[in-house]
Amino acid sequence: MRLVFATKINNVSIDINKVRADFPILSQKIYGKDLIYLDSGATAQKPQCVIDAETEMYTHWNSNIHRGVHFLSNQSTDRYEKSRTIIKDFLNAKSEKEVIFTSGTTASINLVAHSLGDFCIEKGDEIIVTEMEHHSNIVPWQLLCQRKGAVLKVIPVTDCGELNIDAFKSIISERTKIVSVAHVSNTLGTINPINEIAQIVHNYNAYFVVDGAQGVQHGKVDVQAMDCDFYAFSGHKLYAPTGIGVLYGKEEILEQMPPYMGGGDMIKEVSFNGTTFAELPLKFEAGTSNYVGAYALGEAINYVNSVGVDNIEEYEQDLLKYATNKLSTIDGLKIYGTAKNKVCTISFLLDGIHHYDTGMILDKLGIAVRTGHHCTQPLTERFNIDGIVRASFTFYNTKAEVDALYDGLLKVKQMFS
Image 1 (spheres, rainbow, N blue to C red):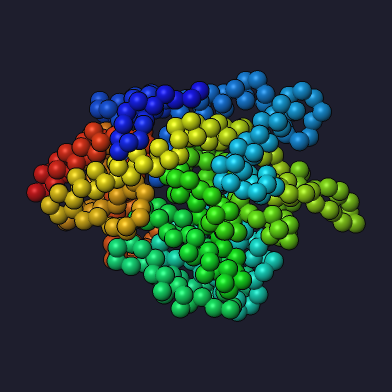
Image 2: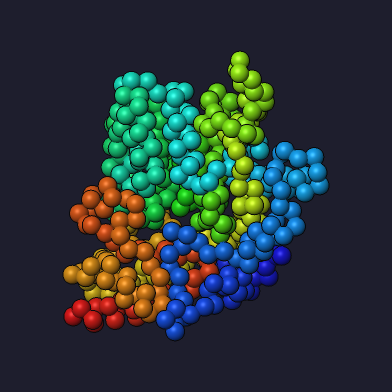
């Protein structure tokens, strides 16, 4: 179903009332108050069409894929593979062979760390990440360094929350084999200059991995224009169910990489004398895939496309500007992450008030925010804090909800005055 846009915000047409009606969870009350959900950076809510897609699969088409000659298996396989095509087009990948279904961003990055790592890393080689990475884009590379005797290097972050590109240029070397960078910081909201980084990385003939968990839902992703070698994201942050994700990889690189896991569906022939593997992308999809989640992910992307990726990006940027200006007027509130280019995420602390206390009081007001280190402990250490409050917005949030957050923070301050 295609939306009819009505409300103009900075020349962007979005029918915000229609959009909010598409997400049933937003209509409920918390502690007797309207739910204000500002935690989409952790997981996004699901539109009714995605919920219906899961129900449809289990009700009408449930059967294991790629393995049956009967009607249900063919129908299930067809929906699974059509979703792969939807994702290929959404990312502007060259081929469906470059779209691998995983359980999420973490699984995708671990796949690359093991398979590409076994393929290209030797003792003394270097892997580079950034100071703002999520733990899922740090720990797999640390483990690879331990296995192979490689060296992990880190790109520092500036005070405003941007990557220090000059420092990056000084630490990359001929021994650098892999560089893995977040498209968007989950804590700061910073949009990193992926195209510029890709050019630097490829000048050294290294592989470039992008953690897109916080990027793919906020604007157009074109993996060919980015020239990244890999791009990973999770469905549940893109309005799809949990337990489904994607790894994009350039076909010529994926062909060279060994399988990450062995089992059914990733083989061509098996004997005790040896095994040959299936062609891409099945080579990396061992076992029974989450075919229901894959179908629902395709429906989530169809929904995003129906709203319009450009519309979503412009709406969120307008909301970010409004929220930043509004919250900045609160005395004693400090925003962490003031990069020129960022998504609709605001992380902050109230002077003298613990982030958990802020989050708990807001919760009683029906406002859901995230508190803690957000799985970015090296980043919070860099800013000399032990945690932070994060309000992450998306296109189903409104300026009225920003106003409610503002009023809630004033109440927090009043309680601790």
